[in-house]
Amino acid sequence: MTTDHADEQQHSIAAALPHARLTIDELWLRYFALGGDCGVIDIDAYVHGLGRLPPLQCDILAHAVNERLDELTPPHRAYYSRPARESEPRGQSLSALVELLEGAELAPPERLPALLDAAARTLGVRITMYLVDRDARRLHRWPAADGGPDREAADREAPELDGSLAGRAFREVRVLPARVGPRLWVPLLDGAERLGVLEVEVDDAVDLEHPGLHAQCRWLSILLGHLVSQLARYGDAVDLGRRSPPRNVTGELIRSLMPPMTAGVDDFVVTGAVQPRHEGNGDAFDYSLSETTATLIVLDAAGHDLRSGLVAATALAAHRRARRAGLDLGERARAVDEALGRQLGGGASATAVLAEVDLTTGRLRYLNAGHPRPLVVRGGGVVEPLTGGRRPPLGLGGAERVRAEPAVAEEVLRPADWLVVHTDGVTEARDPHGAPFGETGLAEFLRREAAADDPAPETARRLVRAVLAHQGGVAQDDATVVLARWTDPDALLPGRPDRP
Image 1: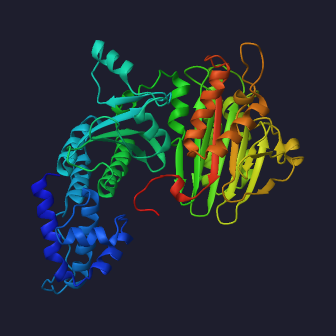
Image 2 (image 1 turned 90 degrees about the horizontal axis):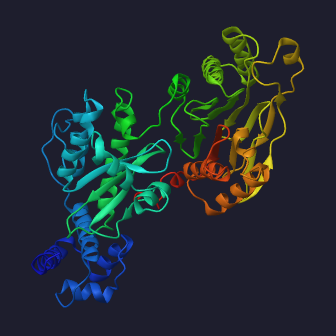
Image 3 (image 1 turned 135 degrees about the horizontal axis):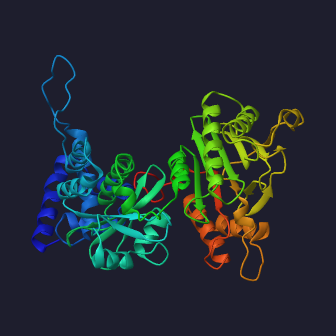
């Protein structure tokens, strides 16, 4: 802020104070309640032109005065005979959001970066979008060069998730100021799912810590994240921007059936991560969230050939159809049994965990169809296996075996518990010397993560990375983990300026 502008601001506050009908002590109380940290003597000196304050403190003081003026003299307007709505957006923030929303109507995915540029200009900033690759290792600028040396160079220079400030903003779901230059790194989110980051460049005079700037960036990120996910359904530009590795036919089929990797409702979040052995895989998961209930399935189709992908896709679709028909857990499992036998014939099978969580009471009901035992992480590190509800793998549950099935098992989750469901590619992963990652390695990893209290999506990402590293960087089997957690809603989006 220039000296002239600082003087103008001081004079305006001093001139407005009599109209606000506030004593210095009353002004200071309001200023302090808004987050100001200067003493009443400093405020008195500033108002009377005998001292200076940092720019942010001046803005907080001005806001305290303006709030009081709004209370005393609200805007007066003539009434209409019926309620009237504004036809044009008012304010920079609203105008930018409306401009982005209206521009995206009927727009192809490739047009989104240009629409973002226009919205950014309305806010007086410059924004560059980076999308995380499907391997969750780097953040790639989008749009990028079409190909050739320029694109190869851009890929080499793409910020890594582990080891860059942009990656830290992504990992921690937190707005972070850059170390060099007036810039912010802002997580790009679709609900609770992390899509990438935004690099927001501002003028030198702008305070990077100003809560208003952070709020505007967050609003833009929320809307842009929804648009990125929505427009990705209409074309391939977003998927290509995320540097998706090539998949075979069944890999494409499974990916099209699976939901977003992360979703949250109120105080419940579910997140998954998949590390395939090759371009197609036999691991898959699905979930459904409502006001009162969360349903989950994690499955691992038998075999490592293309047929395993077809088994996984068929089981996933059959379970989803049964869930939408209102069938209970046991009936859903039998529906998958029948679908695998009818569609793929004998020998088609998959291990799976089917679970249902009552979000009002914490009651967990589950079936384990020949799958590794689910785990509950409780109290910051106690890992408890769930041993009940066992039945034959899906596809092998003939009528005579179904009659002998145990009842659906139950457990009561407590607030902040993690439910962890994984495939055997996690615990059976072996290092070059043949030592398995094992349940012990998984339990130790989960204890460390519980103590770190990172966002659940980051825990899932780091787990599959740790399993791959244990194998020397070469996957021996598909490895999948799904975490479901009751949590404080703020934990989904830490650092939100509108939350205490």
